[in-house]
Every structure is written in structure tokens, then in C-alpha cells.
Length: 478
Image (tube, rainbow, N blue to C red; front, side, top):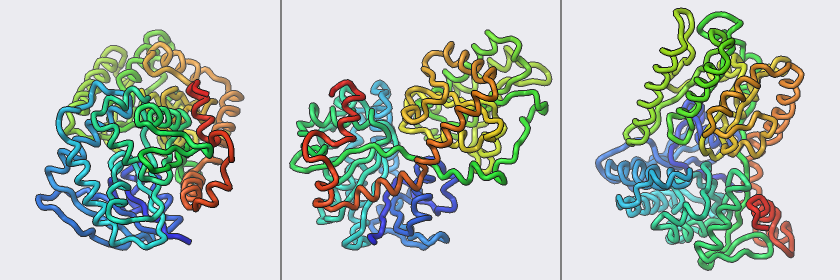
């Protein structure tokens, strides 16, 4: 059996990954089950360039290999190209991208240096699985120094419509870098359709009969692999003992929101939607609390400090308008929490309010469902622009830009009968159970492990492959 080598921006001990959240949790859950090598940035920023990875064994049986980055790289590669160009564009916020800043050279350089540090650690039959937008160019750098292993790439954030991606000055270079992977995994069929559409019409790619696409003399397979969660930490009874909202009374309904502090998460719209709910449904005043957990994120980027100031102002204004001596409508928590704390918070909430403006998947939606009591579950309200909405149609699906729709969804959720809540939860839980973290990683790695002969035997001989047909049909292109 081939060893798994996972590459990601941040590397932490699998035991600490739950606190890190996001991509780290999904990777750690995979590595705990399949001992392998986890390679990437140590999180350290240093003055001098380091070319050799530091190696350590984790308590979970994995090997961790890390490199620091320099202060200049942190500004230009991480805060710069990755988070001020790729992140906003991929979330369809071209207006926030800093194209003119000249960050791309450092992005390429960090990808090249990390590839050179990884090569000596590789075995000939290793399967390499690269994660997320920080390392789009890693396979190209590995190929340029002779690495022939099968390399897969998984994008945890959305892939944008072709017109947005075409705005990136280096879009052709990025397309050629993507083509160096053997398999690209995306969260949804919409993302697959967007990438195929761009590669065909923006990068002169050509779809092949088996569903792969040829770009710059390389053939790559693209498919959707919706990321899942490990249900046990959220659904085990010992982990989700019911907690009462801080404002005491059992009669108070808690609405829970858990998001990184990021402009893509729709937090101002969520607060305004909750305010509109209180305005239109006076009978729920003193009976409902919105608990919003918003962990800080990239605070040195101007757009992130702006969103924090806006939320502090909004929560203060709403609490000032509707609050009373014994009731504060919004409980705004600006820090991260452990899995155990989150499980208890989810379990105590009558409503899970997940309303990003754009999100690759959004695992909070799945965590909330996993933590519910099947005999008396809460109701999930979910943005139609979260990748999870493609799987979780039994949630109350809303347009996060429409605060009246958010307000009415909150009212619908709170008024929903027990029978309907139980039926919706049953169907949602079945879906997230069938598509958990182990299923996600196994499906991707099994597809990546196919050799060329097996690949051609497994896919249709004529017509585009099933993932491509479904994605193009979803976009109205087939």
C-alpha cells in the first residue's frame, strides 16, 4: 500500500488540529486513520530562508515535516498572493483583490522552495495529496525537479466563475500549474463546472471522451469530492451534554453561529437579519439569543480589521436597541473554541444559522446537525451559496443577501413542529453520515491511486465522464 504524503499550508500535531479548525481538522482525521507524512509551513516566520524541513514524529503515529517562511514571504506569499489575490477572487470578490501589488513572484518562489524541501522525503510510490490555494503551483515545481509520483490537489474553497478567474493577471500560469496534477478535487459540481468552463474557454483546454481535460500537453481529471466531518466528536452523548444559554432560562431559544471572522461569511447580513427578526416578531424579544462565535482571522489584512469593527458596531447597536437589564440579544464571542465546547453549544441551540456569502463547503452546517438530539433536534438555516447546500436540501435554504429572508427563516425555524424538525434532521444526518471525513478521503485517494489502465477501464468509453456531465448540466452547458 502506498504511503500518503499530505501537503498543506499549516501543519500541526493531529491532536491539536481540532483547535486549528478548518482544513487542519479534515487532514488530521485522514492521517490518524492512515499514518503518513504531513508536510507544510510550521507557522513560524523567520528572518532567514530555510531549505531543509524539520522532521518530527507525532504522538498519533504520523511524521510531521515543516519549514518556516521569511517575513518577506509572509507578507508577499501568504498575506499577499494567497489571501489578497486568490482568496477574494475565488470567493467572487474581485473588487477586493490586490492584483497590482506584485505578489506572484513570491508565491512561485515559496512553492518552488517547498517542492525542493519535499523531494528528498519522498518514496517512489508515495501518493502526494496537496491541499488548498496556497500550493496551486506545487505540482509544477515538483515536476520541474523530476518528481513523477501521482499528485492530487484538493481545493477547500470555491472555484469561481470563469469571468472572475480571467481577471487574475496570471490566470494562464495558474491553469498550467493546475494541469500538472493528476487529479483535482473540488467541493461541488458547480465548482467542477466553473473550472471546466474556464479551462476550456480561458486556457484553451480540450475535454476528452473519458471526462478528463487536456491543458498545455497535460491531462488532468477533475471531480467533486464534498468534504465531510468525523461525526463522533459531535454526536457522542458524552461530548454533547446539554448546556443552558448563559442568560439562564430554559425558555430562551439559542441561535448559534460559528464562523471565522472573514468578509466571506456574511456576518453583517446575519446580524441585520436577526435584528429584522426582532423588529418583525416582538413576541420573541426576551425569548431568543443569537450566540455568534467569530474566531479572529488574518487581522493584519485591512478587509479583516474592517469586518471586525463593523460587527462590534452592529452588535452594540442591536443590543442597545432591543436589549433589557436581564436580556442581551446578541452574545458575540471573538475567539475560537474547542470541539467539546462547540459540540455543547450546537446541542443547546434551537437554530443553527449558517449564512456565508460564498463558501467552499462549510463544515459548521454538518457539525451542527451531528450534534443535535434526534428526539428534539434544532433546525439548520443554510446559505444557498455554501457548498453544503448542494447536499443539505432539507435545511431552510436562504439568500444571505436578503435580510428579510433570513428573518423569516428564523421565525419558521422557531415555529417548526417537532415532527417536521425530526424528519428534516433524520434526512440530514443520514447524508452527513454517508459522506463523512473517512468517505471523503478514501474516495479521493482511491481515485488518485488508479493507474492509467485502471482509469480508462473505470470511466465511460464515449461521452464525457459522469462528474463532468453532471457539472456542465448544473451550469446549463449540457
